[in-house]
Each structure stands twice: as C-alpha cells, then as structure tokens.
Length: 47
Image (tube, rainbow, N blue to C red; front, side, top):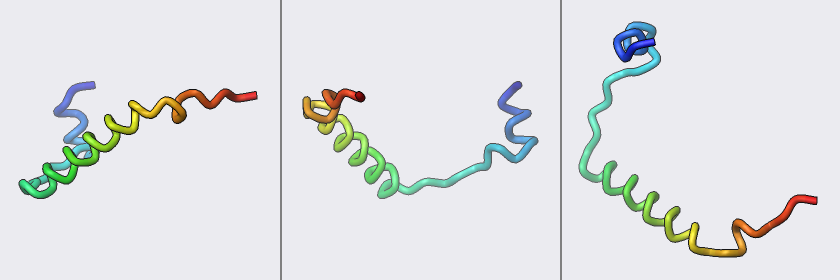
C-alpha cells in the first residue's frame, strides 16, 4: 500500500503544526528518554 493510498483512504490528513506544538512534543520525548534511565521501571518481573 502506498502513501497515496493512505491519503486517498482518509487514513492520513494534512496537519499544520506550530513551533509550540513541536516544542511540546520534543519536551515529551526528553521526559520519556529521562524515564528510561530509571532502573526500577524496567526491572519489574511478571510472575
């Protein structure tokens, strides 16, 4: 399936973003990357 197919099917739509929106998303990425350094988050074992 091509990109054009996705657009034709309405699965993708154009979106105009702002500098603030991009900044907010980058802040979320930075937060999540910081969280990956916390060992106890990924050491929980399922029983």
